[in-house]
Image (cartoon, rainbow, N blue to C red; front, side, top):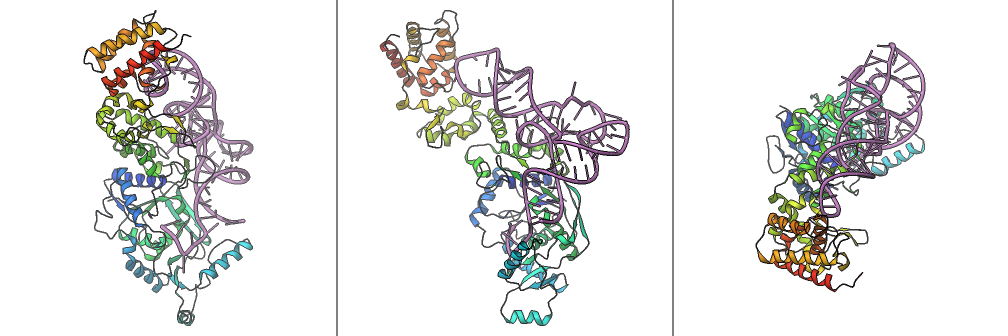
Length: 498
RNA sequence: GCCCCAUUCGUCUAGUGGCCCAGGACGUAGCCCUCUCACGGCUAAAACAGGAGUUCGAGUCUCCUAUGGGGCACCA
């Protein structure tokens, strides 16, 4: 049975890179009919933030990543929160101590800092120098008598090499001189990542570890820890980081698009985001870019993941999300748009959105597109596509109520025909389209409805850019549409000759 | 400073020695469609980091250089 885990340290919102790691980890388990475990690494009491755990769980669920064991769902290998497992870590930390694989280190933080400063000044490699590695019982007793609280450090091998196999990168060999005597138990009694991680992965029977490359350097330490415990090491793979779009370095939480929360709040679809994420560092094959997770699973292999760091192609997400939006039924579309539409037209009737939905779906990259676009100073650079619904904002330019292929007289005549039709009968979008097109065709010399429909659309919506005419009229309702049409005719007739 | 990982169009990628004068996608440009904006269709420009080697043959293997990334915490 394959068992994988995602072990975040919740200190804020989930990073998009973590989401991708979680996704691939989850996919690996699902592909093999295995189990995916959520474990919370909160051993850093200074940074841990309980609200963030809720946020992480909400985000994972939004992504469709369900955990089989972990907080809220339980499981046979719990607890799944590290701060509730400290006894276990203490036990195994002591076991290492008793079996000569670890030792107490009484060096103070100040001494460590001084040591590092000196190493830096002398151009030496940074790291703990092993000064307390061979303390005598008397020396230990002496330090303890002074009331010093020790850390427990691992006794790493001093020479030779450590070899392990990374599922993505292949066999890697590291000189043991690069491995330090890392701290396993802090002086506050909490374990460090290294100890907690190894102990938990072992007792939770994890078979595959997938984590970020930032852990690659510590993998040899972990290999040696497993060796010291006499435990079998899980298979391991180190996923690459996600880089800033511009500039250098990996994406930080402040960069645009770095947090999954942004995608949720901006009205992206989780199916699209998941699809998008799986296209970074992995490819479905056969030149297919758009696919479901279910279709991807049989093809997914850890060894096929690209070990190179990648930038997030954000425009590609807009395109993909747009594709997914086009596939939504009207119900889902309206539900998705509603919260944003209410920011534009607070009292908007969902039925109005229903009328507009089919016309809107091809025009949206994300639901937040119903919001106006503003520049840094707060000026609207692109109005909301729903702005035409607001009567107070409606004030078309009379000069634009005719067309070079349809003069003022012809335009006014056509508007009156439209008024006659709309006033006389009930219509739906199709009959309206048929009637207005026919009027339009009669309004120009060449029998093309285009000039009339375009002018009418501008007049009715008052916007150079808006949803299409017929849907817009349906959304406004007959009373408002007729009222505007009436005013258009007046504006046109009262406008000075050009 | 030391160690490790990586390097194909602007970006995400396909490619595991001949099928590649390198394929797809996004983006960009042009054309078509068209009531605006979109959508959709078609077309175009656009890459094997550089240098040595191995080989009949290298994007694919090896080495060096360069560049990018990660690590060297009582953070994870």
